[in-house]
Image (cartoon, rainbow, N blue to C red; front, side, top):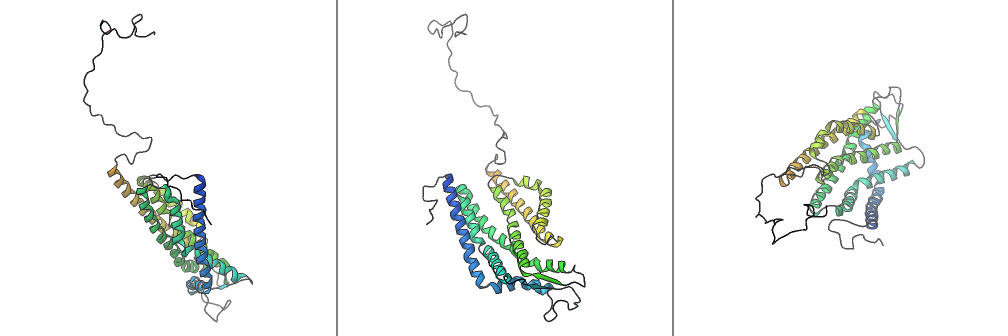
Length: 313
């Protein structure tokens, strides 16, 4: 049995010993992996239906018509999906099942990620964390859906580059590798704006600073899209970069609004730790005058004086 890391009294500031952090991380990872495995096993039962669902739009877009086959002298370039090798169907089944398990179980492993980070948050920040989880799942699924939606267009653009005398064969294992990478990359890329908002609510970055980064972020997102997309074509790269740029500016607007709300409650909220705040220089009333004894007062001789000084100096 796994030992729970939360049986002891919780620290109000979320502090935990290192061993407790590692035990908590192990438990959260195990729960996430179990969820992925359970969904993967169910997906393996419906492997053929899922595979047809993934390949259907591509076949409709660039697939050769039934009965014509490869080398039939098509008016336009077309392609066929093939399984090469005896073990190829089994390998493809595992890939399809695992990809489905990761996507479908995303609400569970995203929640486990939040549950691991939540103890380090203040009580007033945990309510925002729940909203981050609620927004993170739709964003990840939206990225996965976008990857699935643009795949036929991408395949059509790439197959259209084929010379008229050539034929196209799509190895199924390679095809599902591309689909898996696109789904995971698109889904995680859509989480970037959410991460920036999380850092802003935690006081790490400000909306004004994010707005000043917009040129570098646009270039960085474009480079990331070019590297992350497995096909490498400009169309897929643009289809990935454009929504992330839009989401980035949307996240910047949310951060600017949050900074404005924070300044209303605390005028010094936007200051750095080493930045001086404005001082209140209004004169304060002086209290009552305290009497001071005179050195020549016989009733109060005061300290012993030597050579005109009050001490040995």
